[in-house]
Amino acid sequence: MNVKATKNDPLSRHAMQKTKDHMKITFHGAAQEVTGSCYEIETEATRFLIDCGMFQGNRSAAERNRAPFKFDPRTIDFVILTHAHIDHCGLLPKLCKDGFRGPVYMTSATADLLDIMLRDSAHIQEYEAERAVRQGRKNGVEITPIYRMADAIAVSRQVKGINYNEVFEPHPSIRFKLRDAGHILGSAIIELWAQEQGHEKKIVFSGDLGQPDRVILRDPVEIEEADVLIVESTYGNRLHKNMEDTIEELVRAVNETLLEKKGNVIIPAFALGRTQEIIYYFFELTRQGRFNDLNIFVDSPMATAITKLTWRHLKLFDEEAKALAHWSGREDGAPVVKFTASVDESRALNKFASGAIIIAASGMCTAGRIKHHLKHNLDRRQSSILITGFQAEGTPGRRIVDGSKFIKIHGKDIPVRADVYTLGGFSAHADQAALLNWLGAFKKPPSQTFVTHGEAETAQIFASEIRRQLNWQVDVPDAGQTKELD
Image (cartoon, rainbow, N blue to C red; front, side, top):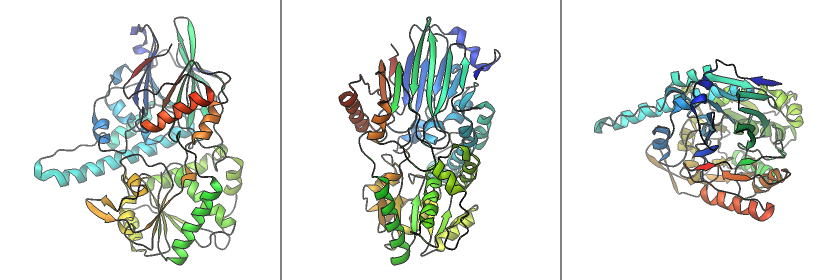
């Protein structure tokens, strides 16, 4: 099906004013870093964005998120979103607040998730701003959220959900198709065709690619050709632990903590994707007889909402996940999963000295309820912390992984005495081998390949591997750099 934007669509109001000589791409984020994904594409007829994400991790992230955009949001005709993680969508409310009035295209599943993600982001910002104001009132510091709940809610009026593999024309000179990226529910690779000066150019954005042969989601779709390719490199410098070893470590960590040390298992987990995957494994391993009588608490309103929504998209699951979804889970010894809703229910979990598995956001330990659970368990030798996802530089999660002796939480230095397990096999990102295999499906090298969405050293290492193994021309752009698409 070929779907076209209407003539009265607001995306067309600037199009006829543009007279650019060459098609260009500007890397406003996720260039030699992992967060802040935002690419601006300019043609002779239109200007649009791929993603509009928040910067996360280091101390400068908040300042960068508050800074004015490097472009005028009023001149952006439309946005295409790869998926609903905050580092790819988190600044959409700010974009709209600052004057963007066009549509935001994404898969239907991402459209369902986006409202949950942005509301949670706004809530965290309002909470953190109120707390900072209380602490800074003595010296006259005024702190406001980047955007408020009303701004997050307003984005939904501009959301356009479309199906995988459906060709869409947001502008007379642009058509695109969203392909399954296998990263999280609704994640997409973008195949885009742009007309300029009578010629058509195909641009492919990998988005975040998932690791093949993972539970719940299908494998990333292979793409065979592109003139220009923008590919992620989050784990472009390493291989993941194999899943068998990861499962063995999970079983050992949980059983030793609960049965031998008599402590709690604390799992910082991304509310979208990782939480649902971990729950899947707890049920599957219980079904196999490797766990028994688990008490699991999902302490994240956002994770609760996303988990319920995930089951509504069962058609996007792989066959193994569909089979487990039909398992009754009512047999003796099956896990008991409780979703906490209120703040009081969350606080009550701090009374557990042992026997609890607590899954809470945020996944990098930067905000949210996980900070309270770390505050009450990091200094206990009986407890264990399970790290199951990527930890960006500068985050508390990264400092825990790197072996810091103390972690500052709510202004206090908490000693790290709990056992820390890094379960690398759970990553939702493709590792170096999987990325190279995905690139290997191309029938010929793209004319231009840009490596993005990886820390500086990682991106350079991955670019070198592409040159060495595939003999492609590769570029690693700097943040803010503009490149002509030849």
